[in-house]
Length: 282
Image (cartoon, rainbow, N blue to C red; front, side):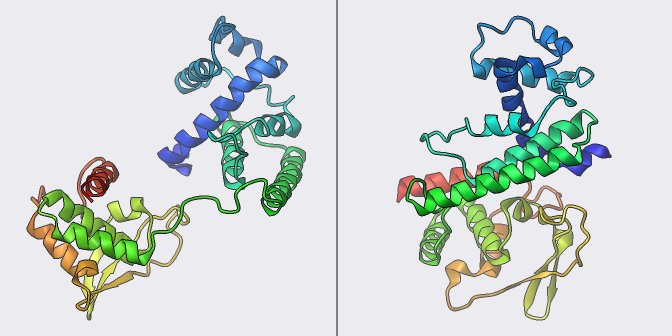
């Protein structure tokens, strides 16, 4: 039950983050690594940082009885010193969002080993992160780093063009990709929410198709009112009509008895392959 406080995907992200941090600690601040944990790692002097990180990840995954960090001796400056050494693949500094992910990873490291951050440590980390946020903003203002972060939005013209091409394609897989993209666009939701839609979450009301979300990233406990999102037909532009897209998808699909609208273990990868195929052909 306790593990359900963090999703599997988030847990993997946090674990990857704190394993990178622990590898840096072993190399640069070994006095913060408990001797039993160092002994369990064996001789790592010839390891690259990537190999050391993989070794640490294997140990923390298999056995949590040996703490990988001296939590009582750890201070905020140790963590921030590591953060400022991190770079993107292009050599640029990390975005504030990426830094926040590492902070969440550190918090998860404490939680995984049954420790609670002291108020003084939390306060000091907060102060450091305020300084880092201001530094990143000034860097962008001075032209030293990119102003935009994250992904660019999908423009409506490109969305319409892609839907036209998907709808005209003869492949059954493209009917799936078309239905998914139109549904996700109309619901304005994350891919995980769109792929998690079940037939029991759908109902017709008046002239709209209603879809309920029982679980969302920003509502992990399902505490918000279960208000449905509404999808309407678009008779003026058939290629982006969600009702028509669903009809074509159902007409060309085999039903396996699953309650999922898009059944399968890895529908995100399935959609990605369709997307790449379409781009190559065009």
